[in-house]
Length: 311
Figure 1 (cartoon, rainbow, N blue to C red):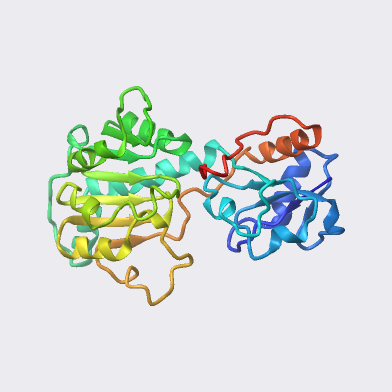
Figure 2: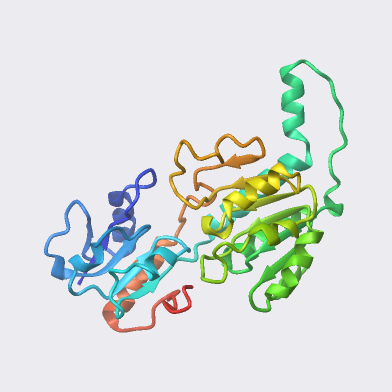
């Protein structure tokens, strides 16, 4: 049995760096990278960020694809992945904390009018303006799984009024939790900032269409660090142009990398970050090694995904 590190993207950690961390957690493991696959028949487990092309079909004994992160929609939907191959994801604290920090950073920037102060400094203008008062500011968090719960807790601890939403009922201390689609428009109408960390499922693709964007509180800011297909981007730009929203801050978009001619780049009310809100895995690679061991031993896997449900 061999574990293949084949991350499928560039601009992040290298495969060899990841392989060395897995080997450190389990020195006896046969860990390979795409630069040195060896006999494809040996590969029973792959660890990936993105599952590209016909890659799964190259390994006749593949049993498990381990996602090096949380979102698994492109893996479970991959047309070349045989039905019997299982899928697991990671639930590391490090990127969950970083995504919460990303939400908090942009919210605080708006709270403290930092864009206004930056532009005033550029023209040597002394322009005092009252910041928003945090206890009077409502922040919605859509998606209350591992990452969303971390984000809701951090925002709550800073002193915001936090309102959470999820498909099914959840409870988080100090957070006004609601669930079900019927509860969503009302929550949106109450929030000054809306933080999205929803998975990509048939129910969430295009969720923020013209009608749902219209439910947002006038002047609200929409932040998305979940999945890019959550938002109808043409409808979003129309809502921004109409003044329904103050700003959209997007770490994920429908097409990544975002093409240079996409109008999101130049829209004055859109901020783009290149899918960097959660970067580090922390000690989560130990779970990759543990799933390799469990797969070999025929034991229950960590964080296995229901491929039919998509999460």
